[in-house]
Image (cartoon, rainbow, N blue to C red):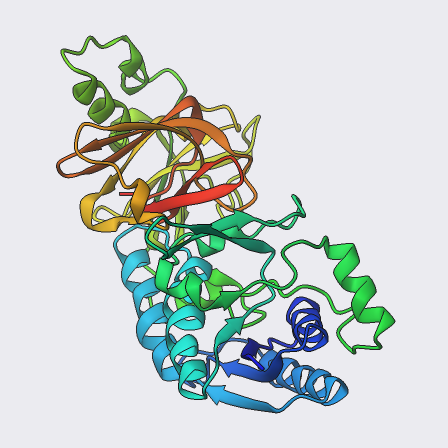
Length: 396
């Protein structure tokens, strides 16, 4: 009998994943990951991990599977939290959920599971794994979108490797969320009606600005409103000698100075804000809402523009540095000067958009057919072919 360790989070998805695996005849062990207890940074007045851990225990007892809690807070702090603070300090916006999957669930947690003699780990992610048989007898694993288009979580797993996929099962990938809730209800699992968690990955109910302000000190600066007709937006009329010159030009961040607009307010620190953000600016009196179009953490200035269609929000091309490119399918990796037609997304839940990958010596351009709103440094771009996620990279 194959042994599977399930990451029981105390939510309905992982509960049903454990139920299905047991039903399929696996020997199932439930493990709850405790990822935070640093008293120097308060996460929440509530203690959600205690409640979640308790729910996970009740589910394990109901299913008749062994259960234990493991403390990964040291690894979580080093690999996720410290990284997040460093990135925000540099004016970048990291994605903790993608990092948590790469660094914690499918690395530290996976290694613990294997030490327990497990053949696989399983999670409650809405995605699927496909297997290709190679002529030499080896197997290549495919990361496929979940059947439920509203819940597909393949983007969050965009940094997984072949080695990690080989040891992973996604039991609910073929199901929709309502089907998962129904299975939980039919089997009297306590998590059947539990709301999905909205916090940082495995930390719980925390507002990100509150979290950041405890480590990144407030620093007063100005908010500048940039009109939609500044000279910087005439970039598309430029002439280029080569395709690479054109891509480099269109992937560049727009550079502003305070003379490009008027000061309309003050903020408590440019490093708290991210491109495309609307809330938290506290500037009134504009015809349309203000959106952050750029942050300058060196000079501590936030540049904003009115309305969702402000040209400062849009760019067609982004760049991923060579050391930040990751192929889930290494066999499809591009060589220098090769291109690949793909569909890509720059954030979770964004519809896939047509794009072309261009490989050069120093990295990879992702050139979208249509301009994209709020391309944000530090976030992940993931590229697909149909329902398969082929690779990803950190936007630079």
